[in-house]
Image (cartoon, rainbow, N blue to C red; front, side):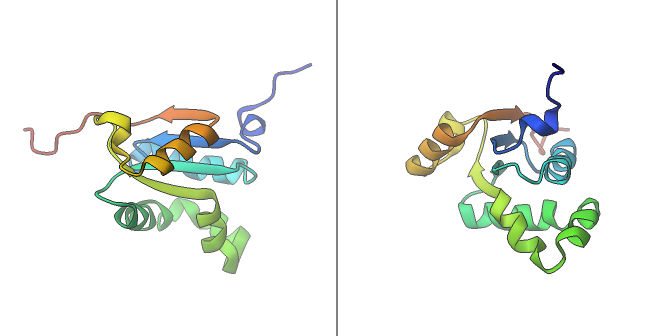
Length: 129
């Protein structure tokens, strides 16, 4: 028996991705959605002050990327609803306790539901020279 490929292992799974707005993580999100559209959910940890800002950041920094063109063509008018059905932005910060997730219920849901964690975040100080 051959080992299952990565895409097969993601079928029906919930994944938490830290550093989701970083260059490599954005490519990873697209690749997961393209190769395993039956992934249950991708929690994307985004540095943002609140959930509304996190969702807007994902919309503007990830969802609008050209690399999503093949998925836009595949799902056409349903792309936006399909995308938000799979993607759940989470406002947080990896350097803080509990990943900076202020909503305790949301943090508990993430812990209960997540099958796989992909840590892509880095310590970034944009003020350093």
